Image 1 (spheres, rainbow, N blue to C red):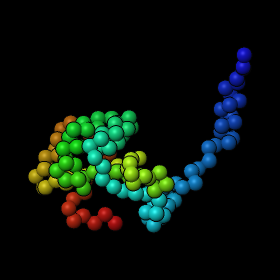
Image 2 (image 1 turned 90 degrees about the vertical axis):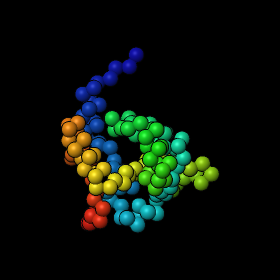
Image 3 (image 1 turned 90 degrees about the horizontal axis):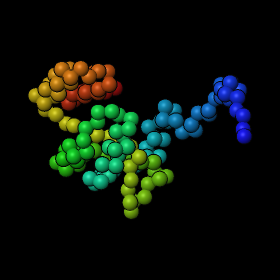
Image 4 (image 1 turned 30 degrees about the horizontal axis):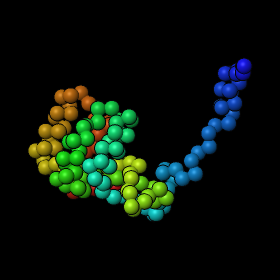
Length: 135
């Protein structure tokens, strides 16, 4: 039988915090990030696996079928992202993704109003208008 003093463990954890990652995204320049990542398009199965993994952290994420339909119409709306060290061109697998939904003015306005009516928090949304300067 093993006895474990939780107070001792908690105090030790406070004295020895976990080390920071050696390659934190916050500390990388754009060139360093570009050298370490690969961005590519994936098939329907790749979209499904990435969306299923993201659904654990993002509640209320849309269905795989909707994202796959949009990507089928315009493949540049869904990009998978992987670390270059883990990337295999023979079987490309993403570790994350970037998804965009290009909208015309009327669609953008309808989406904003629908989001407001549903009571969603606009602080969690990023809406970029065509021609907007992001700098």
